[in-house]
Length: 444
Image 1 (tube, rainbow, N blue to C red):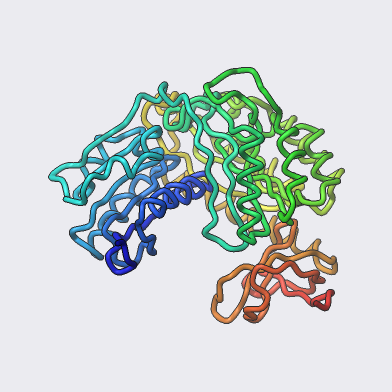
Image 2 (cartoon, one colour):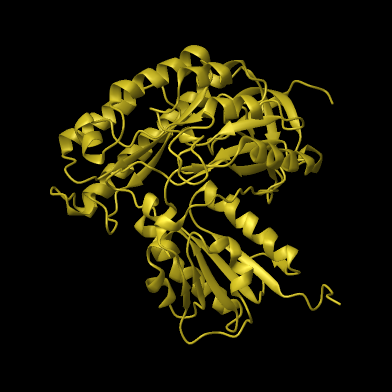
């Protein structure tokens, strides 16, 4: 008989995107179904599983540090690596001291079948398919956070951006069925979770068949219209979506939807058409301007986040300033700034015009400063308005935090009764830490 005392303990660490978090949660449930007890990564465990990312160089370096951290807690622990970096460079990960098992994109969801015993290996065992074999789809969702869940709706990418390794790590674009997504959304709702964030590699490309069928069985608009009807989910949030795939019809639907919130994250990567072409992005800056204008026309209070890469090969001072001024004049709310890092087997790594590291760092700092100004301006424009806040579950230095539907971060003194509740508030002032204070409007 398995008791809590003799259950093997497993811990997880996730690097990278919301998609990785949804998949970690799904893998964790497979362990729990096999009788394992999930514990925090900081706790003693028999197995430590690291879900890796390979978008940036920094994510690669973090891996070794996390392995050392696990072995410091339990030097006899079985350590496994899964995820994008594990698919791209399995031998490199297997060679890291203390790593026992490395699983690729196809194998990671069957991880419990690869663990026969927990004896540490002299060298890491690798089970990794060719990425062309990723002819399958595994639905995933995270339910670790009581207030918010990440729901995977799509995987892989057919785009050929010259800086990106994701197609090599995750394969071709493929989607879950609407029926299965709705089923998972209902499961999330039954857990008492109030908000779902849709996630994937290229979610605007939703609808391509499970086995890489180029024909779209459904569109992204079909998906959001179906999800809008799920009972019990108060909020639906679209994560990153390509500007060329964010159609007017979707923006118009979100504007009149009860569940979808006025918050868009739309990657730009560069404000220079010259650099966009070198990146092989599928739009020019003029289309991006029209997407922002359409969102603001339909939802003037909408929050718009932007991804941008600095230091791409060939980005001269003049071209960087073109991006800086373009973003400065655009009606957006915040930036996610990525410093370009060379990735093996990409076109960009062979390009001329390499930007020195110190120049990349300087440009990144400039754009992070611009982001802070944009966010503050957005928050200032929201003062005096009434919004609905979903409160989170953590006591942070005596305060509880939450987000409005349009992604304004608020704080108020800790009150456990507010956790996972939606409350109507009036935004009153910006605190010294950049978060917004408020007065309650409703009286529960």
